[in-house]
Length: 486
Image 1: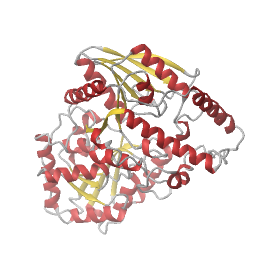
Image 2 (image 1 turned 60 degrees about the horizontal axis):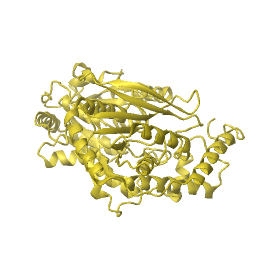
Image 3 (image 1 turned 90 degrees about the vertical axis):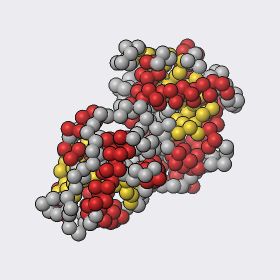
Image 4 (image 1 turned 60 degrees about the vertical axis):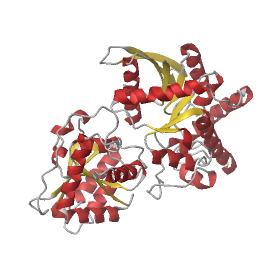
């Protein structure tokens, strides 16, 4: 089978959870003897709108596959109003016409165009769509309200989203309220058309799929029956995984040692975690090992300031090697904790914590809350939870664990059991196993054939291309303050 994997970026240029997972899937597919082509977005805009071609190699089988990148050159092509790109769409169609895959698997639209599955269907190619995150349902991408600093559960609609979207620079004062509202509705309608065009919808967790369909107004559209839950591809690490030795009482001499690792950001709640620690009545009984870093220097400085002012001993350990966490100081902690405000779709960082034998303290939201519930139902309760985005409730949960060392030990023991027994909520599936599951999805899509979609609209495409050009030109007529860039 020939599979086209389509996403917003690809290693080595762009690296992240989705990018790494798709690369692992591509390599496993070619190792199993299938033909794979990747079509990816890019941040490299120099040289004008164009495509470029490279190759990636599966290090195990030695087999190569082609990686095409679509380079957009219009301004701020990540902006939510730039979701529909006739130029990128045409380049995508040209690549499909040249490659002729049996199935297209859309993993993300950003930097490309929000009508990829529909365009594939017009060329007679069936599609699969994976909802990796919440970009499809949110103009600021992650559904954490910039002003409220908490997760937003409002449906995608102009009345709910325009004020929030104004936080995304650049602002567009040349568009009046009605025009911006029309853009919100156009975004929602385009994403809905993509999901209807997909023969199978893949999601890392059931709660993630249900939430996305609901916020798009598709909860009753019959799409949930098309959902297949497949966690991201990840090869389980060979780590020392055993229950932690926990003191009979946590004291200043033998504190509760917490580990938190991953990206530092407001989305990931690094600030919220440190704020919660500052609310503990006996801070000397706790120590936090914080590994990772911030993509933006301003937030890194903020974390450093918060850590210095916190009465708890917060140790900033910097960047770390994901492949060698067992040798890192966080491996000797008693408990993993995250302050993430996000509606996580799976949470690979939790897999890493469990492989270290760490029980977890997680927000009761999204896939993390669902995984905690499923683990308890399976008899391996390796997590306890708190109210998402609430520093006081996180502090309450931490204080309860401070007074219950036996529970901390029980969480650790459950983590070790979950890893040893490959309990489904505890670990992402091995890459080869996940590739086989995806092949079954692709076969189902091919058997059903391409969806029936609206015909191409050349006049509408030309009008949109002119709209994009005017959008770019209007930037120069406004000050940085008016654009929200100051």
